[in-house]
Image 1: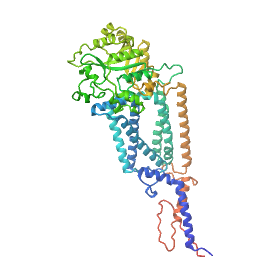
Image 2: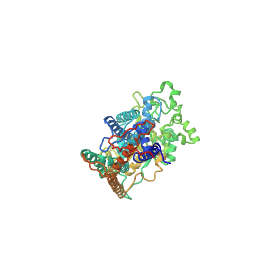
Image 3: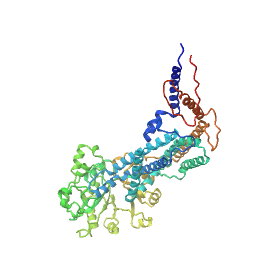
Image 4: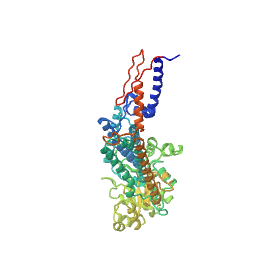
Length: 606
């Protein structure tokens, strides 16, 4: 028995629906594109999206501006994230700076890092999605909520960079120093990123129908590419050294002891520094009102003692205006346990926590005796008492008296730092090592019998360190607590560093990022060659795949067997045949513009 026309038509339509779905999956990767378009512009339905025809712009002017702002935001947020990540060495200074301004302690540095990482990740994901959509020939449409998020990230990055540049300008020096150890790997990452971008760039290059656009996009891309390829020619890193030329690791001087493991400037802190292998101890000395030198970094006692409980009306009073008896009534360890300034409290044993909580202010003579017992170098900054203080004019003599008469330390273990009355100091105690914070000429330093320089790490220079070393003047850099920065100081030839992290740096057996010139050249040339080959392959592949598309303005010539031509033919047949009228039903289908239709021939009834 024959089939009715209605039945045949329904069978055809059923088959055509399957064919249409297969075509859409084949040419549009429907689930993948739906996910990307939904995340980028909240366009979860296919009918909400539009494809880019060959040679057309990927978006309108508004969306093009949004995409440009997205790229700018990505770059700025990346710069700030890298900048603040490399500034970890000074996070503690940043947090205590805010403590002094706000009156309470909080790890603002870590919060800022987390916020920067989250915002950068968000913007980076949007940019990756946009690149994928462009690679699939989709028009870009950024949802309004993402536009707000991008603007928030942009404003945050600009404000953060501006404020920190004003208050913490020296951190840009840290950023430049970091390039000396990370530059080879940043170069490798940059080459990889530009190589990956060759896929969408090659696709749109082959589909463009105007030579001007093709020349422009290729010109910019090749300029960036060859700049990256040649960047290593101007790159310098002291960690690229021939085998056998690396000197010994810098000696470690505990900055106020081991402040990550115990309250700073306390007996426990110096014990920890000695326990973990510190070769020296650094501290800060103030003269009490009754003439006893004691250890205190801040001008007042608010941060590191419980002065607000014992002397609530003298919280902001200068530390040097307290007598030794008053200082001995204060607790110098509770703040460390309650505040956990380095986030290391959890690593301490119960015994250490109890001990840390019961520390007291230490005087200079006890500190010197502790160092003498273990034959450790000592270095200290000496704070001059204020006006109307009984020992304002005799502070140097009083300190020297403690070193000579009230302690058992060998003078040769003392690195004398104060640049005041040096000749008197050398006459009274000639055996001390004269140390200067001034990077003066060799002649001037030798005239003052300077044997060691104490410089901030931002002044690190391998050339200067070698020059002073040739004149028997060693160099100490402060304060270095990050392994990468210690590695750089090691490679630069520094003789010692002042650090908050003796327990971390002591375990470093070799500098990070150390490599020979041969290894570096091999990495550089190999990465550039592999990148160039992959880029050529990508462009050739896209030219071959899109060879049926018009690549020149006004060109009508196409390959009949090209993939895009085949897609147009198949899709035209599907839409034209699927437009058939079914008897007894009213149906309408959207026709696709610019696609030729094939009129349906009805079969005679059987």
